[in-house]
Amino acid sequence: MANYKSFLYTLLLIILCSLNFSAANITDYNVLSFGAKPNGVTDSTQAILKTWVAACASTDAATIYIPKGRYLLHPLAFEGEDCKSSDITFRIDGTLVAPADYRILGQAENWLSFYRVNRVSIIGGALDAKGASLWTCKAAGGTNCPNGATTLSFSYSSNIKVIGLLSLNSQMFHIVVNHCQDVHMEGVKVIANGNSPNTDGIHVQFSKNVTILNSSIQTGDDCISIGPGTQNLWIEHIACGPGHGISIGSLAKDLEEEGVQNVTVKAAVFTGSQNGLRIKSWARPSKGFVQGIQFLNVVMRNVQNPVLIDQHYCPHNINCPKDVSGIKIKDVLYRNIRGTSATAVAIKFDCSARNPCTGIKLEDVNLSYLNQAAQSTCSNVNGQAFGMVLPDTCF
Image (tube, rainbow, N blue to C red; front, side, top):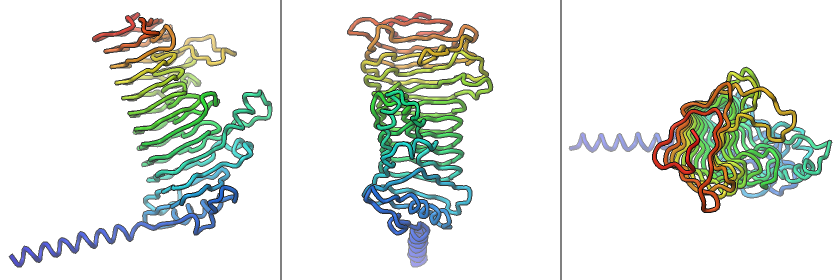
């Protein structure tokens, strides 16, 4: 018995020591200590950059804390190639705000960018890009309007987490994931006017093993857009609208283009959006492809194009390509898709004459228009229907 008690005591000491060791190996960095000012007027760009440099230089895991308040930031790049810290977490209770002059951000590609970082997390907080004045410039047809900046960008990075972040009024895309792997986003909220141009909520390209969960996106372009080179993307419990839906593409911008494969969209709700579930490609030659796509348990509420494959994509009908799309689309499943269409045609498959869509499956679909039967249209598509499918299929 004495030996057993001694063993338990030793085990308890080991556990306590390991807990203390773990706590001791997380270093906290408060941006106020580096000169950041939470008044929304004083430029805090260099202060937050200094905080990042200090956290990177730490041999411990690090937490960068941004307390309540508003912090004015110019374009800022967080580079991770020389980081010693194994894990850096931004814990944000405040709001990061862009300069009032849209030209300051608008001439940069990104507002906040992370490049070649590993194990970086952003928890909480808000990003206010103040993009409305740039949208107004573009709507007025101004010739001197800058393109605008993406609010938050991750490039060539891995093991990224974005939890509980609010992105407001981005000039262009809100969040971009480019050449990354193992990215987890959850509880993200995106808000921009339904008429705001090119303000995609979350854009993923050339990346694999990305998860987007429990998020709400209201914007003027795609709620989530999926570009070339995307593999193993899981999207679940998304509320979209206003916006242009969840879109794979646009593709066929280039001849040498990577494919999109293994994408699942599950339990999404679209409300008043222009599109629901969309795959789009330009009518150009391309070596790209789309395969292994699942759309599961989706609700449409007054959506203009609930189910759409458009291989003649040309949004403004100006200088449209006159070729046919080289993108090969196959093995796409639509299961348990229900709700209402804002137009008579609820399902439209407009595929490439050279590369017809194959392996398209509709299973338990129920879409109506004004409490009546909706319609479906098909061009160059081979598919099957299972269970009850309304509107009637055109395969």
